[in-house]
Length: 562
Image (tube, rainbow, N blue to C red):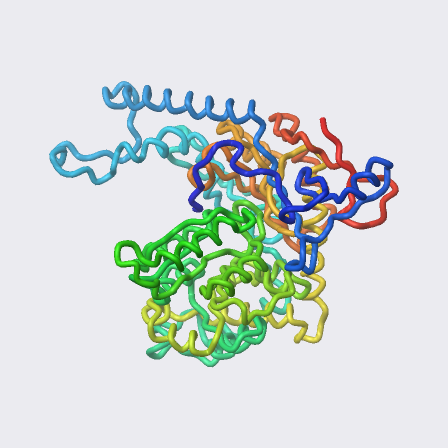
């Protein structure tokens, strides 16, 4: 779950490519004066590049929440809260049956164990839409999945399985970016052979007797894939962040963290004991530079001593926003103020860049400019675990100081082989072009799916190259309604609300995959269009209409306002 920043409905302006002089900025697309004139004349325009830092167009859109929608969303939460207090009153006097955990009568004088008031949201709001989460699947999480059907007879407090299986549900929620999560093919065959030789578990830590030759092979391959001196693999992606950040910084150090960072980064920062300051996400990085300046000028509070270290924490792709970090600007500031940079590429590794090497390759940057390169094997590689790459001195230090390295059980050998085989395929070292084709297919699917949703009139957040596609739902009643309606149409989606997002920015989050064919995407888009009309979700006031005579270029559009 990702902590959502507080703010009003106009927290995010529509933005793209930074400041542009003598031009027009609308709906996340940058036009120069000549482009505006050409568009007015019915000619095709293209997205422009941003200054000298960027070697490619960088295009993000975060359309403002319509005022009426924002007001109705607040009213909706207000009504739910009032009814929640009413139902708590009825439960207190035993007029309504109480399903949630309560203190025993003989312990009423003890300090509360369940923090009753803090669970108010769970009891009265989450339970109404709980059927949209934790749905058990019984197949490979590929382009289509099979889901166990379940029913609730007590308003989602408990579920019973009917024994039926919903077959062939289009999977629009798994992080299977490159389509390697499958039970056939080279990855499955290689993992099966390793399973036969090594078994499933290692039953020891890497420092004791759990360091296999396969682990060494994997780490050398990861280092070569990333273009760094060395790398280390871990058994859990979340713990890769939460257990390694405390090993890198501590008391007397300063962490500058993006406001939208994942919970694993937030937890790691808190466990470190370092001072934490938050900067605004992708806001031309004025906020980050101000914090860096203040840190250099004023030093630590009270003592005014210089900070021992300053560590900047960012992600490649932000999994709730679909946003891509403005890495060239972050690196420029990091060099200017002599700070360290920790980059979490959980969602971007494999999914961005011409050869799938992540956000560093996407921007054409040098991996040596990133001090700590972190990523996971759970998404593009269809496996489990995480890694950290960087200088050999850094990796040698973490091998002896990281809790995740010292105390955690080693990666399972079949999982290691899955990563090795899929990564070798992406690098083209398996003698095929399958990996390159998967990276290209994902990019094409991403641009096509995003463009079609915008043409339909939905508000879509994020970067045009991000395979994470948030469709804004806003109102609490529509969170559950959207998820249920899509499942009725045999499409599995992820819906997200508070506290994983800001309270008025509930959304459906689609994750594209190279395994999705155009027919699958068209089927999903058709159903999304129908559900959008049914639930009145087409809030966008800036629709993009494709030009009929345009060449095949995903960056050329004509813009209209409703």
